[in-house]
Length: 154
Image 1 (tube, one colour):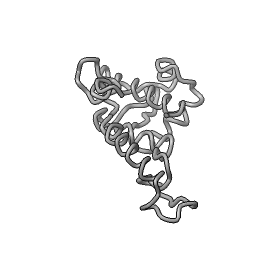
Image 2 (cartoon, helix red, strand yellow):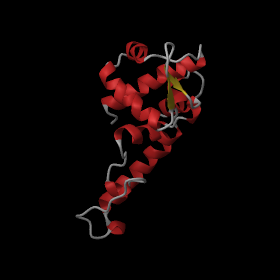
Image 3 (tube, one colour):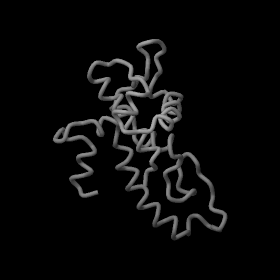
Image 4 (cartoon, helix red, strand yellow):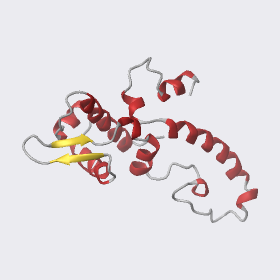
């Protein structure tokens, strides 16, 4: 499950992606908040994290604001999820980037919990790793990854 913070981040990035495809001008934080329905006070912190990760840039000045500097097809939803919400693995011993051995597990290879959740998690990863910001802003019928996921009933 994604957090509310992640939803706010995705909505803001969708607005920046739409602007990039349109006029391409920087959007002020007030504009992003209004268009995305996100509270401004939360958005400031979220956009700072996303900027520091190199997905967006801030432009100073009277006509400044935020711009998406990566192509939406290069903005991985799984990377954003890890950035905003932290590890996405259901168990710490399955995490790619935040691996931790479970304290109560004497043998990872024989751990039935790990085996079952690993199967589910790897299937989830295949799907989530294929999704990008472009899938969120794509028009229905364009055949993007998000549409394929929907077609297979997930």
